[in-house]
Image 1 (cartoon, rainbow, N blue to C red):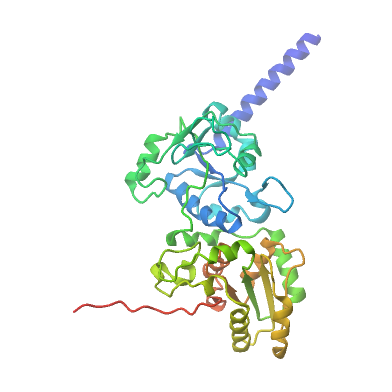
Image 2: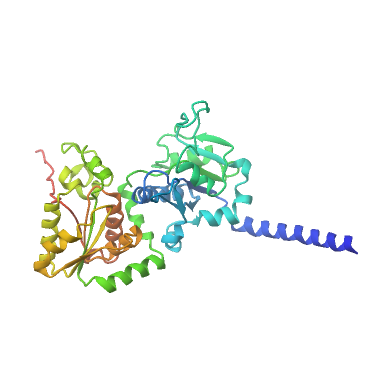
Length: 396
């Protein structure tokens, strides 16, 4: 009797496994998937890359596995991974292309779709390990922080490396021919998932990819926190400002060459392509307190501003701002916990936004405002920058 019960239980388990595999096989994307490590820089840089990765996935008709955001917290020796849907909605992205969170994919699809023997790391070309001189050249997909912690977060081990640097244009899919090259070289049956050691997208985001920002929308948690702060402290119309002034930023701005047209980080958001709207200067990159106070006073007076919201990586200048603007009866505020995501949501909602021309953090806000329905009534400007339109020379 016991033997029969055991046999029945084994039979039921087998049937259950077969049935679950059939469900998975009907739900997975037969065109394959793309995943990557957003391991180059902090939030602003990661989101610049994200836009390019979205375009790349759509061009190859593969589902994009949404990687978690990589955060670097004070006192933590290793990077921390935070799921995409902690801060953003997934559904709006599906209006543009097929996506799935990495946690969802690894938990529910990976065992069937991406067997361990088909887990290859994709990179441009082989390189030496920074940490182990005896290691053979390769992608070094898990070499250092955050690379190792990112893949380890999902217990992913790679069985080999694949290089794509010899494909004309790499991941810049500018023609039908380049798209077909990827599909022919990496068929889904052999490579169900293209796992990149870094984002298959341009930095900073290309002009043609910027509009994809409209599909990136905050989660209800972030939205509600931002709304609560605005309703409690910020009388409308209010100005949102972003200040970059930490030591690392000071070093970045020291290397600016005003005569160069080469963009620095997200500087084209104000200078335009090839400096069409003006030159990038050190004062634009790292505006003085005098410039900040003058630019802000001008907007406050012109637009009858009632309050100020400040986001910064170090010095929020709250005392200086309140002292300088007291003649307008205007008060400046900041978040007590300086939560960057809630700060971004508040900046997006401001009636006028003044940002840092070079910063990718500012660029996230700039794009969000530019491609929102309220863009016409909510302008964006940049500290220390006065745009000029260059006239084209016409030869007769």
